[in-house]
Length: 178
Image (cartoon, rainbow, N blue to C red; front, side, top):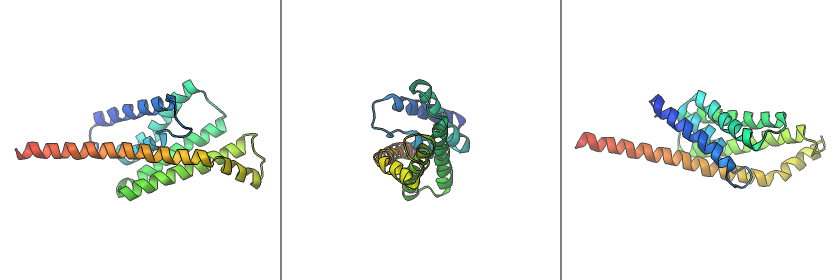
C-alpha cells in the first residue's frame, strides 16, 4: 500500500518517535507500542523496517532509561525481531483475524522467550523446573499488560492506517468523478 519512500520514511520516523516517547511516559509495565511497531512494519513497510524500527526505538529508549543484562536484552530485542517476522508472514493474508492472531502470538512469544531468559540468566530463580514455573507464574501480570498493550497499539496503528488509506482512496475517487 505504501508506494513512496517519503511516506515510508515519514511513518518510520513517526513510529520511532512514538515508540521512544511512550517508553518515557508513565505507563503500566510492558504496556508499550514496540511489538505493535514491529508487527505494523512487517505488514505495511517491509522487511528492512520490520527489523530496524523496533530495535531503533528500543535502543534509543535504553540509552536514556538504562541498559540491563545483555543476555536478557538480547532476548527482548530478538523477540521484537521475531514479531517483525510475524508481520511479514501475515502481510499476504492481512485480515482482522490474522492481525489479531499475530498480535496474540507476538505477546505469547515475547512472554515465553523473555521470561525464559530471565529464569536462565538472572539469579532470582532456581535453575530447575520449579524455578522456571515460578518465573512464568510471577510474570503473568506482566503478560496481561503485554497482551493489553499489544492489542491496544496494534488496534490504533492498524486502525488509523486503514482509516487514512480508506479516506484517501475515497477522496481520490471523488476527485476523479467530479
